[in-house]
Length: 320
Length: 304
Image 1 (cartoon, rainbow over the protein chains, first blue to last red):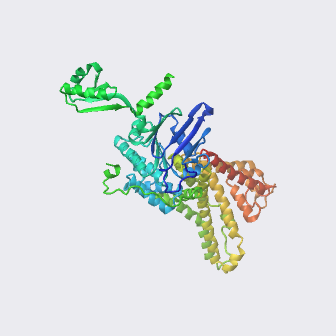
Image 2 (image 1 turned 135 degrees about the horizontal axis):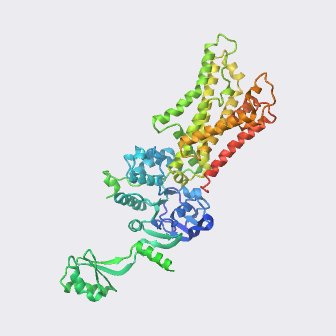
Image 3 (image 1 turned 30 degrees about the horizontal axis):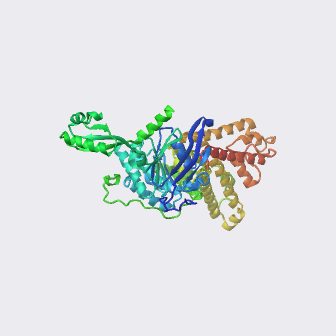
């Protein structure tokens, strides 16, 4: 772990722990509202999804990472640097994209991003050049000289992302970057977020949309009521469920009859779902399909989604 | 297919890292200061926004132009040049400066809150104190420039129309420091008070009205409490004035201006009051201190 923040241009790719928190706790209203409740985290560089319902503590977590509010107890270190010890220094290497509208509508995107680049520490000429580059990157090459008041929601979201990138941050905090976007805009925004990871920029993306995380992020952190629910590689959280789905075209009913002893379920799309226990069961199903003279179009193992992981934990704690 | 591809571009330059130096708090403060000055002067904005400050500067310059013009036209008729306005009187005499501050201070403060830009600004290497310094500094710098440039015009014009320019310069050498100091104190007063009031408003016109109403109300209140002005006119019975005149926040910077130029208060109802200069200074410092303190409190949410 480095003892100091990496210099400009150096990425956090080789840092063992991008972000570490120990017993991070933050309360409001005299302690009656616990926004964060002893959060222990260790994140690697990459694209991380921070998942939680509204009020789960995501925004408070971001404010603490930005040094804009102090935790009641616990510590947060980014790239080995204690946020509370050097908040201004940490902020100089972070980019932040808030969830809400935050752009002056009477200025052009180029002016806004360049000005924010200068305030982030870039020399004036470099700020204008980089504003042009990042607006180009997010797909606002021709629109950058137009006032923001004429921008669509998607264009505003891209401008917000551009201002977060203009000073070449080592880590970008994105708060609900797909909020308010139509499916097309959402797809494009998530594509941009994925690309940031390939540029060596680490990302923490707060969202309540588990699908966005599942398709975009290398790592997942789930929090609920300020507490850690799950954390790890996205793939590691998506375990197999022991259920397979068999596609035999229009002959689902015939397959249900052939496999009646295994209690299959005929789904509305004509596929058949049934529980298995090991590879021998899979071989037996394939043999049964062949014996019945049915065409085997597909045999897929069903995996849990992040929704399943989140709901399972929530139900467990509710029951407890 | 990426968003960029869909836009019809034939190539994608990708992402280019920045390998130069990044400034810290000082650079952030300076950048915010410059952005605020640009905004106040209407730069990179519509022509309407540009027109307003320069019209006000022109209005503030009118007394200097008139004074120099009259001095030029009457240079052969009188032994001493006609002086319509003195350098002391010219500091803060133009309401154009006050109107400018009233309308421009909200314009550099209010949009940041109305557009919810503060999280964007404070996610950069900037603290609440840096923000206050940059914003007040920007307004103060413009007020100083708009208050000082007409004085320069007046001084240079008077010097050129005088019989002996060098003699004029040496005879009036003291104004070379008195004017900038007095204008700077006036600029700090106007800027800190106007920005502090604007920090509580979201609409420009509301903030401007609040500033002018505050100054007007304190002026009227001081007038009522201190009694009529006439008793201080030449020939009138002078009862020593009234310390209540210090309540007039409109006159507070003018009292300090008098102290810079004359070492005593020479205008208004605070004339002749025992300890008047100390009271005037105390009021000035209290208003500036309270205004800056209020601003630091308003932006305290950035804890570090």
